[in-house]
Amino acid sequence: GQQVMQIPQYQHVQEGEDFTTYCNSSTTLSNIQWYKQRPGGHPVFLIQLVKSGEVKKQKRLTFQFGEAKKNSSLHITATQTTDVGTYFCAGPGSGGSNYKLTFGKGTLLTVNP
Amino acid sequence: DGGITQSPKYLFRKEGQNVTLSCEQNLNHDAMYWYRQDPGQGLRLIYYSQIVNDFQKGDIAEGYSVSREKKESFPLTVTSAQKNPTAFYLCASSILGEKLFFGSGTQLSVL
Image (cartoon, rainbow over all chains, first blue to last red; front, side, top):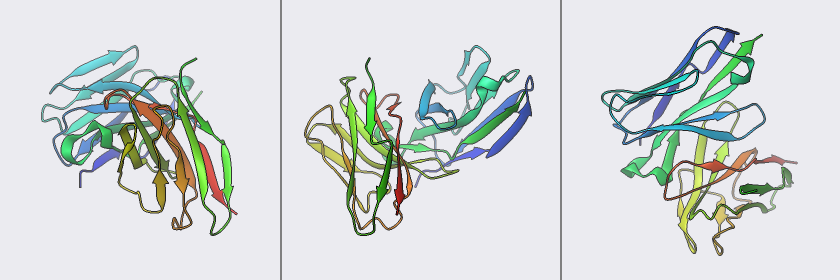
């Protein structure tokens, strides 16, 4: 079945350093979503990318969708302690339905103040 | 405030027991979902429902059952057939398969 691989599994940075997490799919995706889960919390939607080569920014966060629509990345510039959490990407599952999202295992970001 | 309410926050199951996790939403969303999260793992889909009185199996439905009698409610029963039920269970809802809104989760443990 469709798989979404996410790397790295963990990333520890000093506050102010940049951070990037990568998401790769075994199949072409119609769209990709990103979520953030704070420690002890629940996932919160960040963004959805739909177009090939799309780049979207939210303050210090930059999201990219690959030209082939099989990979995506999330880059955080100048991390802050509020960025701590696990970042998940998710793509439509088998059949291309958003009702059956397949989540990556996530990247846990810790920030040393 | 609009949102998704899951209860209880913590739940303990004895061997051979069925337990039911509650999920209620007042967002007027048609679709509702149940995900299971294990430590260091992503979210895995148990069941989803696109509309009242209809639901579909996800990737790991064995040992679980659901009902969708009302738009607002999507309870999940963890049956005794689920041999490894310890996990964090997340309920979510969405409009037409768009972005997911999650509840605060239920941590289920086995006594």
